[in-house]
Length: 171
Image (cartoon, rainbow, N blue to C red; front, side):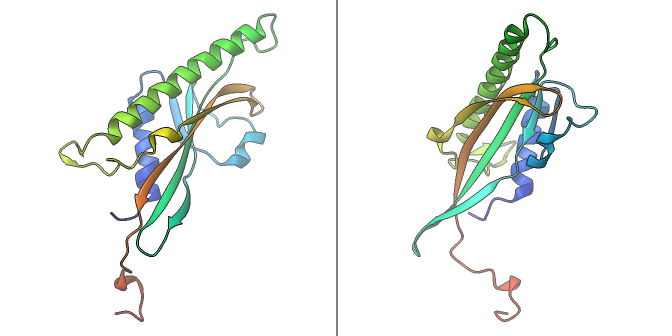
């Protein structure tokens, strides 16, 4: 199997966000944005999609890329400084965690399908089912957002053959 491209991974998560009835916005974010205000025009709950981080393991006979993926579901309590701020935070945290579970369940279901839309499914059998991990986040951004971050692994075999067309000394 060829390497999974950045574009394939990000497009998949953007597509999931577009299809989920409760997610109102999504974008690929950069960690430096946390110290600032949320991007303008974002509606809540929002899915913030991390760029994949990749590590390699194995030996000469079989090597694998572990694509560390993450997304964060965020929303804003309505009256963050009011008397019921903890109740509102709890409500937002519950909503974001439930959406995160929905996304996890969809990813697991998608990874079990050999084909999607009549084509070979790139995600088939690549998901590390025991790798899902959720962490509470917030308050973050200057907007005081709360939510849940989900991290997990997608494992794929690294091609064993060098693509000679990418090297001018191997042609």
